Image 1 (tube, rainbow over the protein chains, first blue to last red):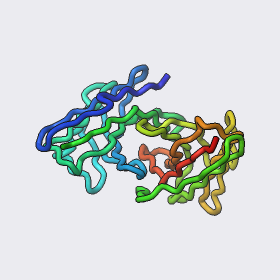
Image 2 (cartoon, chains in turn cyan, orange):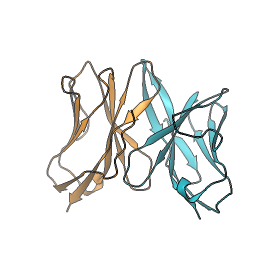
Image 3 (cartoon, rainbow over the protein chains, first blue to last red):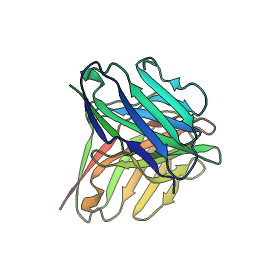
Image 4 (spheres, each protein chain N blue to C red):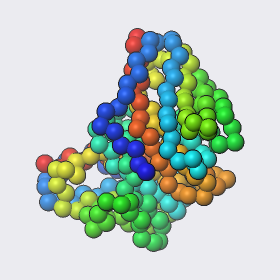
Length: 117
Length: 112
């Protein structure tokens, strides 16, 4: 159980265009999802916390107008990279929170490799 | 805060030997810790977790040790196999808070 599906697994786009990445919880409801970015040989950097039915909470330094997050249902959160530039090329990973006795464990999607050319 | 590193430390281990991966966590208030395995091009995969009221927990071929005094966490992998080659991250969480903070990561290379 607790499977998170992320789509697409990779995407190449032209500079200036927008790209949408989907994150779905397949067998459970996720009121909270998280979006991470990971550069090569680095750790996961939390970008934002996505809450169903409300605005996302962005980490310091992450532009909310550039990285649009929508969490319209309990099983789907989307991240749209707007006006993408080569420096946005990265590995984007979503995760969903599984509540357990007050602590939070995560299950992760398989990631999306974004290349902006 | 977030842990960011430009270079992943690498641990090379002979197949069949035991591996020990270490992690220093940052927040003394953290009370839940998780080890993740990340293979190239994939998302992190849960391995094992431990709460702060424990100092040791065992799984299948893996053991996590927690030393709260020095804020240190370790992951021991018994009889390391080529399939264990990956990057391993420790992560910490505080009860009641959603945010999970990841450590820098360690690349494990298993030599056949």
